[in-house]
Image (cartoon, rainbow, N blue to C red; front, top):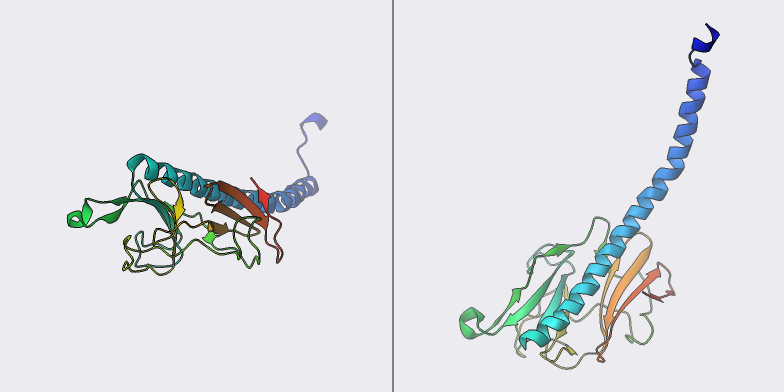
Length: 209
């Protein structure tokens, strides 16, 4: 019967072709959106952990920091692209003190790395030159050894940002980058923790988040 006729081969081919065209347009958009979400999610975790480090330092009356592994397989944590909250434990290492992890180790998402992708200027009123926070050390004394290819946002017992020597440091920042954007968390001596993003541009356009 006429009402029971199926689709012709031409009709099926046209339908498959239309679906293919739509898929070719939608899949790249979806993939880009997923990568952007991962980058923003990692940036938010870093910002939150910087805030937690500040609170830990004040609450436990010690130093606390967020350590970012920029590419050192011998650091703790050992995987480049990982980061962890650490607290200075005065009773560890035979009462000599040591940095100990406070919570789990975090890893940047696939396609996300520490860096600022060639941007040549920091967010306004944060740093003189765009750069990651100072290199971490394995202790808190002047003789403490630096841990190569790391960056640390460190707070003292009053919740103020400091460098490895314990001096007030107003230019802390951790930047991560993905396919088309850079996200950063900055800390000034106020201490004000701020959250930023910029597309990949030689002259960045920073937006406070």
